[in-house]
Amino acid sequence: METAESHERAAGLLLQSELPGAVGADPKRIWLPEDLIDAAVRFGRLEFTPGTGFSYGDTGYVLAGIAIEQLLGVRLADAYRSLVFNPLGMQATYLEWHEPSRGFPISHHYDGDRDLTMANTSFDWAGGGLVTTAGDLVRFLRGVFGALLFDRRWSAELTAWRDALRWRRDSSARYERYGLGMGVNRACGEEIIGATGVWGAFAYYYPALDAAIAGTVNLRGLKATPMLDAVVGAFKTIRRHRTRL
Image (cartoon, rainbow, N blue to C red; front, top):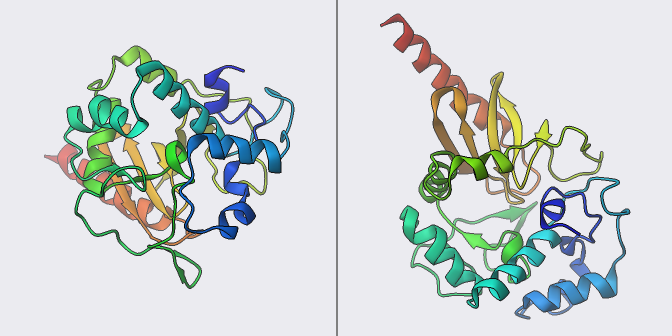
């Protein structure tokens, strides 16, 4: 199975986020990467034959994280910091439960009425276990789309849209088109490129104005679409005024 296939969600892997029973049975347990793969094997099944379908999930990222650690010989948190965070000045970002916090309070986030701010999310790891800020997300987008992290050849790989991929009706995330870990959506009629998170976080690049947009609604299941529409709408107004000048 190719790593790219697992990142574009076409590998048929069990989603480790679909293991609430195992996580809930021992909420204080610190999950290690090997535990996540073991749980996926023990509790799950292939969603479909690799390459024949498309389903959103994070197990592919866990495999990629393990590969990074084995290739570099360092913890994933250290790889993030040396390769991404430090070069881009992302000083507020850290891998929660796997390294010390950076001293910034976490905004409360909810699943319905349940406040999950103190929940043990060590099971997220490479699949989305980072704590960050809107400012750092903007720095990351600038790094990706401004060719600061790698040259534009690799940026093109991330945005090589797999038009044949189709989202399932019950998918927790949807994009008009999807590449490697990021997709295309529209806000106020404009194309934006990026990703959304389970707690309502979002990070998008707006190519028409070379702008980066990041934020959160802090509630699982609440769409950030109205906020994105408002922000992109404001950008469009600014663009019109600039054109008149």
